[in-house]
Amino acid sequence: MKNICVVGTGYVGLVTGACFANLGNRVACLDIDDAKIKRLRAGELPIYEPGLDTLVERNTRAGRLRFTTDYAEAVAGADFIFIAVNTPTIAGGAGADMSYVEAAARSIATHLRNDAVIINKSTMPVGSGDLVSTIVHEHLTIPTLNVAVVSNPEFLSEGFAVRDFQHPDRVVLGSVDRAAAQRVAELYLPLRAPIVITDLYTAEMIKYASNAFLATKISFINEIARICDLLGADVKEVAAGMGYDQRIGNKMLNAGLGYGGSCFPKDVKALAHMADEAGLHPQLLDAVMKINQDQRRVAIEKLAMELGGPDSLRDKTIAVLGLAFKDNTDDMREAPAIDIINWLIEAGAEVRAYDPVAVETAQKLYPDWQVTYCENEYDTARGCDGVILVTEWKQFHDLDLERLHDVMRGDEKGPVFIDGRNFFDPAQVEQMGFRYHGIGRGKARRKSVQHRTAPAEQPSTVPGER
Ligand SMILES: NC(=O)c1ccc[n+]([C@@H]2O[C@H](COP(=O)([O-])OP(=O)(O)OC[C@H]3O[C@@H](n4cnc5c(N)ncnc54)[C@H](O)[C@@H]3O)[C@@H](O)[C@H]2O)c1
Image (cartoon, rainbow, N blue to C red):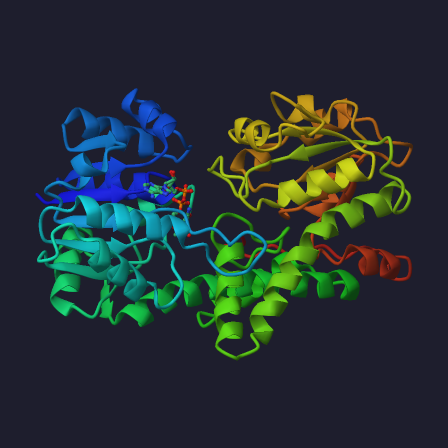
């Protein structure tokens, strides 16, 4: 059993703390947000993350997990101190805002009374390990303490964070002090995952390069989707056909409304910024970001086109299904729904919205939004001219299209269904009386060709099709 302190009790810190406690360690989760710590002490989770409530409850009850705002109490006796505070994009800029990390490093150093390893779990620009080490050594109240800094970037995916901690693809550790990295590696041994031990800068870069690669994959398939729309191919089948190639793989190859969340947008931007600052123009990363931003407009453009042109959204009522940036989370940071709702409101549309868990987040973050929040999908669609499926919540797969159609308004051509996640078979939705648009389903061209070459081609189904 090791004594661990986790500084920052957000998505990463809380999952890290609860999971290390569950491995039998004694963990103090620290945060400067008094309200958050009070909620946690009262047994209430400040975030939605499947499986986390059970872990927190079990380990708190067993006395292995505690929550505090008191640095002195949390840091006292800790052998390992994880920094898991936020590193958002700097206001009005592109680089990472390191002020939270710097403040945490100063507070840790001031309150430290024993030798310890400080572990950077927050995503930090390459070179931050040196920065944290310098700050800590400058502020140590007891200068003779032996304090090493190890970079241990986090790769968890929100909505699957507990699973990702417990079954990581790999653990990455970087340090100038290899023995300290080895000690951190021992904490992870029960997980039986590959452990990569490298230098500080390389570990920090692995995190940025991984996120940039995944974001690139998403922007790549979204660009292919736009080409598919023009040339008459179906991107869903294109992606399935590509994904069988093991060099490509089938993950992160779903065309949609682009990536969001607290990581990909800010990390790609920060990496591009680091490259720029070092004198290299990051052409690919710039394109990835541009494609992603443009992708969100696709849903609105398709909707407006079906309803009669760019000004057609005025006085229309539109249902937005999904607010969170992805399924299984209440996190709305950089969610496509934010831009989509803002554009709808700007265009004069009335917006009704539903999300299984993120409505509270939306109400807190955007109190000025003129949005009617609803209890379920059908209530949301009531009286609407169009619906946009924004978030890939699994329950939206099971939408009763007939019931949805019955409650919607629509003109003589029927209500519009924009499937921002390509959940549905276009022909099936059209049969129900909707005007359907997915992302990259090649509809426009196929329709015009069908006039000449009936009967319409049907997508073939193959075993294992996703
Ligand atoms: N959320 C993810 O999916 C994810 C995945 C991988 C990596 N990361 C990285 O992990 C880091 C944390 O992300 P998050 O999503 O958990 O952030 P978050 O905003 O949910 O949580 C950060 C927490 O740190 C606290 N904090 C800020 N300054 C502090 C200080 N000086 N002392 C103590 N607590 C302090 C905040 O009050 C907040 O509760 C970021 O660098 C992020 O890029 C996040």
